[in-house]
Image (cartoon, rainbow, N blue to C red; front, side, top):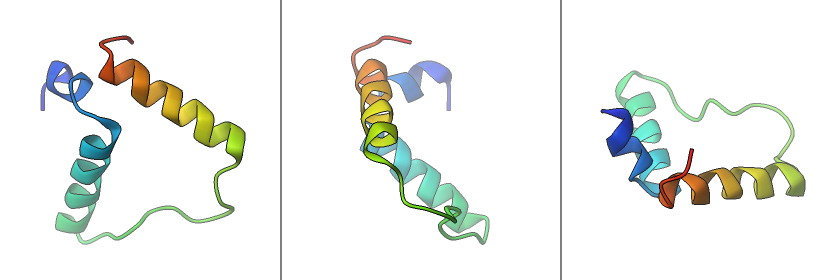
Length: 56
């Protein structure tokens, strides 16, 4: 996908693509370790909103 297409996606759409790619490559959920903290989650949401709004 072109970077422009990815920036136009919602975070949910992007994560669905990542999940599908990982599944097609024989992998499952790659996350291992402690759950995400509230601060990390807020930062991830802010990044997703920036992508959805055309920011960097």
